[in-house]
Image (cartoon, rainbow, N blue to C red):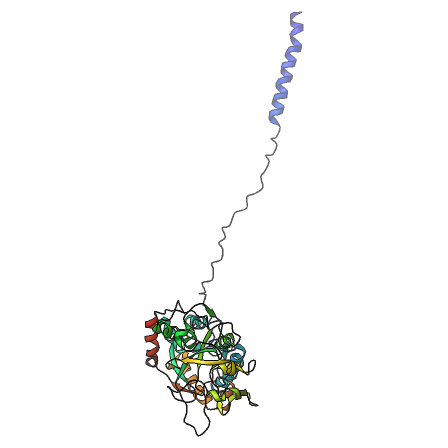
Length: 372
């Protein structure tokens, strides 16, 4: 019995051993294959092209893309300056082939600032005081000085209403003063020096914005007195010309005859009025009947045509030659020669030393460009 019972166990053991041998003999399953790695090829960014960046070239001076700036101080009506300035610009363009751009800055000081800020392409029509300060500030240089009816100088005038009880400069103490602009030579700085020299304390001051406006302020009674530029009257043909030391106003017996004639000129009898009062003759033809001249100053060098300190010498010489030729034409009287503009009857060469008198005045009053 013992033997019979062992056979199944022995067979079971043999079967188990055979199954293990058969399993070991089975071919192995293929291993999973990974995607082949693509070889990374190092790529370099293309090197930037080393081309130097150049600043764009400035257009040639006097070309339409780079016009020469012509600046006029706002001493009279801006529309008269612009229209007359364009006549000048056209004449200079025809003579030189250069392009000019006319403008009227907001003040005398702004004109100087523009000339110093653009030293190589500006021309300025500036008064003698403005020239001295501009020369001091950045080296602005004069080319011409204005001539008015044969004179290289002009004056400052003090105006009051004709029926005012003010009879002398001393009577101005405590009175209200209307002046064109703190940068005006004849309208502000020279009168200020006169008042300081006389020891006069002025009362309230009013900046009117221009010579015409200062005259109108007196005419309308808005101020007690005003100051503006003075040019001597033209006397009748055959009479001696007005000279410094003569009475500044027209004779009293001619006052009632003052009127604007058919040529739009202000005459009193045969005397032609050329001071600042004549500039408002259109709106106030009776200005001489209402406003009289109290006093005038000593002579002041006339205003200038000046160039920026770095203006090219060859271009400047070309313009100066054309300007001399323009002064001899009829178109001159439609431009800067017109009395509603600056009233230049001609030009004369100017040098820096011509303005030494103004420098003395600047030193005496302590004026600086910041004050201007």
